[in-house]
Image (cartoon, rainbow, N blue to C red; front, side, top):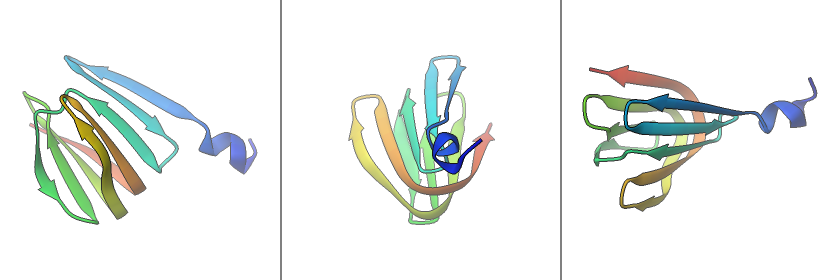
Length: 83
């Protein structure tokens, strides 16, 4: 697979009332946001009800947040589900 093809890969996950789309390791679209728990350029944690989803990486930032949706950009190295 060429580098450009790998960058265009989208992974979708549907976890209870949460829907998450991951585009490469640069963007996450998360539906089901109930609030930001932690926000920094190396770690972002989002409350999604029954658990918290944590994102770790470099240059992380919330590009857009409205109602129940949040878009996270940056170089994502890990995603963690915290009960």
